[in-house]
Image 1: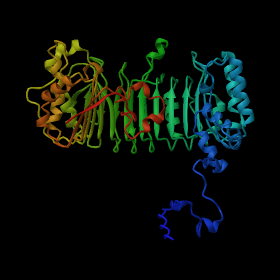
Image 2: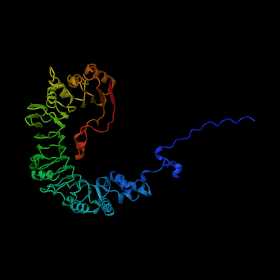
Image 3: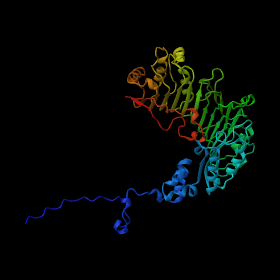
Image 4: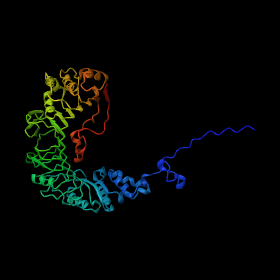
Length: 502
């Protein structure tokens, strides 16, 4: 009888250590959970409720059909997140009103977020005030953390609804629009993000509003009027943005639109954003020792241009009128170039802000302007009396050598070449170009024209992209939270073609 062949060893699958009970699975008497087990549903109701409250209203409501375990969560355990805009698309007035009223009456509270725009919803103007007051008084919104309330667009605008003040103690983010801000607002001890949009504001009401928000960090002033000058005194404010509006108003109100912003005392201020393209704003910084981000500095308005003042240092458009002292705290600068200016102006900006690490430039130039003023871009002997500390540069709407017979096509190349040859600490330089210019012939021509082989920073990466989502547009700043990004000018996501010069 022949001996039996030894059985081939079979390697046992190792069980994940995280699934072993003390003493092993055998000791625990339980099988490891299968891979398809729904472990999220095992979380406590309170945790699942917080997750659901972060979803948009429609998606949050749809979690009710996931499983029996989820059926009750949106209406009971999840703090209410109710955005009337999100549920009103293609709904008739009666259906929308009934839906919102039904949700508010069924939910026990507390509230997390409530958004209502009376102007663009199918409300009858006569019903708007009573309906809004009724909804804001609902117990489902108790302890509300975020409120967006835009009143019915009318002239003169109505006062801010008094029922909104019942959330003053708990609000962390607020948007008030198309209303008159009260001269004596209540205290908002926890408010960190405030957006004032198309609002009529007096100097007294603005001053008192800021004073009653001791923890305010981000303030966005969007199309405010009846206050030609805003003065900022805040110990907590870290970001402030001013954005223009497009609404037509009576002449007396247009004369009183915001024209001047004065930062009297803001020891925590880090970001100062002038988001205006169509009208002039004069900004004076008296005291902001931590200011790191400034933009947009632009030259769009001819004789009457934007003005930026730091003490006795005055920047008129893109021209440095006087420089009594360098501004060493600023590390990020964004520029809108609306006409053909000399590179000397940009060099003056670098002298004024000697510690700049990020420089963003948007070109708003047509080829006719380039043809006419192309020779003005590059000074005869560009030079700096300070070392460049720039690490990141973005040139948006760059045309480069593409000129279609226009002599000025090379002016942008000379502009960019200055940084290629002089920025010794540069890490990244991005050129956003039109798709029609994005080809191998263009890249080869740019490489030669920029004198890439003589670049000052050998480790820097030079990218060409067609991504229109490179730098944010000013109309994308809709809420004060948009100011609170680490870099408010750069978009977080990107798309489009991307090429690197090697």
